[in-house]
Image (cartoon, rainbow, N blue to C red; front, top):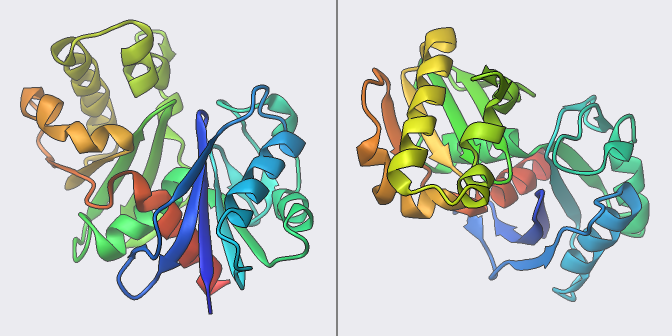
Length: 248
């Protein structure tokens, strides 16, 4: 059975077939830019382009969404895509666009977290583990003894009077041309706030910036929890989406 994972982000839509025994991509991923505006129909066409680019029709497709997903289908928030996504039945929309393929939809950071807990930096960790993905926004996946608490969306906690992701996301770093040192101070302040609320044993830092963890993690001080970069890096969402699809 071929399981395909797609990760919808605020800036890109990427996907690949996934080898679920290894917890890795079976082929090099394919990516398209997220359409602007990122309306449901436009994003669905981007997802189809990614899936179709591999030729062979998969048996199942797991798809992440950058917002709250309830009941495995209904979109409740859409901070980094078009607001017209709210209340959309994403499973029905995307399944129809993919010509009736069985589709599973879940929060993007939850997908990344599930993958990291089974195959990556969170493997065999008990207690409270919090994965944070830094990209267009800040996604979060919270685990207690390996069990996911879905749709936490902790990037929207208030920090200095703003959504935290507007202060400490990778996009904020790029938009304001921050140095690694300046950005690390903002990430540190955010981590301290989250640590005060949840007292995690482990922070896993994911998203594309995890490839450059050596540039900013050593600059972060005063956090009691262990902090490690995601091992699956920016492929975690694709792998986690496929994992969810295989279990549906």
